[in-house]
View 1 (cartoon, rainbow, N blue to C red):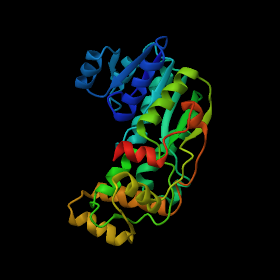
View 2: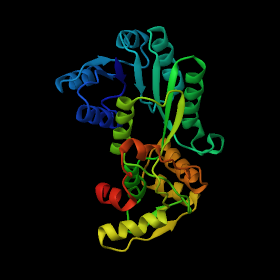
View 3: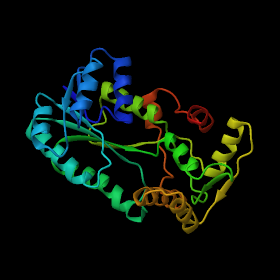
View 4: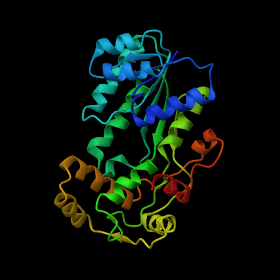
Length: 284
């Protein structure tokens, strides 16, 4: 039996939609961390269980009869401790294989968001140590996040970001979910780490050109200095954590930490993932 955590989240919901679309033979359970989420999933005709990562009893109950788990990572500050508990209880309950959604970044030690993202790699390492079969999906930045990045300061003065000329292989969240579901059905990739990226590397100057074509109006890219960017974010009242996340991610992009790509996601999709022109038309 397959179990999918975080099914009420955006990525989890995308995985579930694709599973329902492509296969009637895959029996799976979905989970939510809240009873309201469980009730919502049940109302949609899904087998749903409560799985709160901070509640060992709920995890023990959720994992009964389960042999494979898609562990969709959380955004909590205690992410590693949560996910370590998930892995430990899964092993004790007889789960054989965990597929974990991590992050595709070249050098976590150099990352501006190391304090948040290091837990992904701690989870990866722990998963490899405990003796379960694993598959690690290192997800790149979602193309969907571009609107958050470029829209924070508005577009009146163009795209204002301190990302330099760093490139990113953006992927739409729905395509990430589609590829993940296809992997769950297809099988394979045991004890492998996969870079889930597109093969289209693009920087924000190029994105500005593409967005100009999509919107039919010139949009420039203004490469800000990080201190200027942080000051602007503070002026519009962004919370400290959001400023840390935005500024740190931009620094990582500028420093080339996302400049990697792999064709495995395209292989699982059975086509090329959306090009920048295509995903900008969809999200903007």
